[in-house]
Image (cartoon, rainbow, N blue to C red):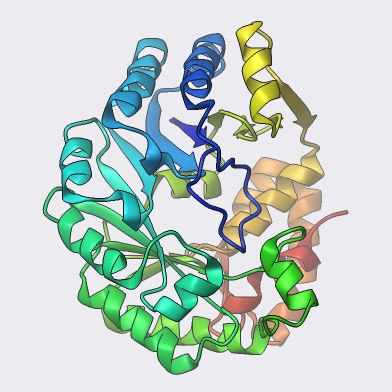
Length: 373
């Protein structure tokens, strides 16, 4: 099975923390959608596996009209083999999700909404320069539940000046709304973002890693008590409502990324499109794919396997490392994991190595220690 990711590079305004590729000018929207559809046609032979997930990311895909979404999805269906009941996700911002818009989206093939709430508090939304307000954050979820069963919301923690009490209230509000899936991400200060400038200039206090770790611990405790499964470091769901799209990335399934800056992966290589709207459109119009390709060495593949699997509840399979990458990698992993087992950061459960409660927030650093350079 495989997936398709479609990058919609437009936003109403720039969030202060975001370093994804996007434009706040919508002038080239029609040309962009034509180019995306043409790229899908140009790359129709790149995936031989049936498509089980289609994901509209961005940017802000909810800026698209239902007619535009149908156009892109029809192109996907015309050029690829789609399973009978694929997961089709649309990332959406609360300010776009009026009841009329939600109703019209429900009449497309989209069957899952991923809503970028980030916080239920006005102070946080203002700091992040989000386009929606507190009232829209609440109202859109209530309305969306009338039309969609499969709903995920995004929240952020580790935000400067966010108190533990405010973060706890965010979690409790999300749980009270009974959405089946919640993704929670720690706020990171990316280079060349407004947030980085504000911190450097003393306008905003820097994020505190200790506080972020405390926020994550509260998050795991609260969601677990409510019956949610922390199936990947940042993702929590009622059992049975795991994101199939996200899970495919962690399970080394191939995916095709279309649109400017979109990445593709076929296990042995990775490629990505140019992160420039004008150059992307012009290249596709000429029938030329504007992408860069990287062949993944066996070391790259092993490192990615360790990095992604260690973040999941299932953990790393020692036997699978041996079968996928060979005995040298299996020996290397078993030898180097011991220091983290001794520190109670990792635990062995039969063939599987998982992060402990103590080590969960440190998984990326632990994985880096286990990389083969």
